[in-house]
Image (cartoon, rainbow, N blue to C red; front, side):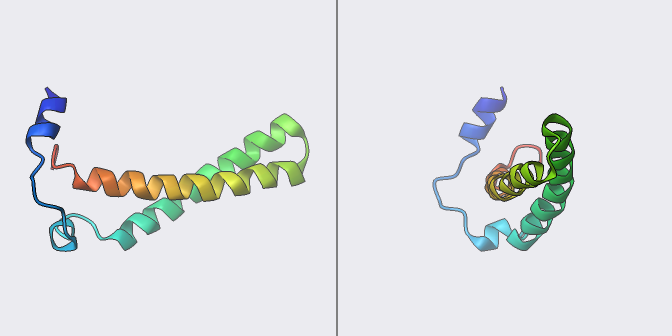
Length: 87
């Protein structure tokens, strides 16, 4: 199963930047996180405005959403970059 492959494919050695650069550089993950968060934040802004009717509150919600989810996406992307399954 997939879980077995993930566990069995894991090497004892630590991943280094030299290993990682075969796939994507961290700066690419940052650019992808930023572009995706712009789209996601516009969506959050629109939904928040439709629900609250207040642009200031909607902007506050969207701002917090932008920062937290961008950071979470970056680490999510970097972790997936270490998984060899599907490459």
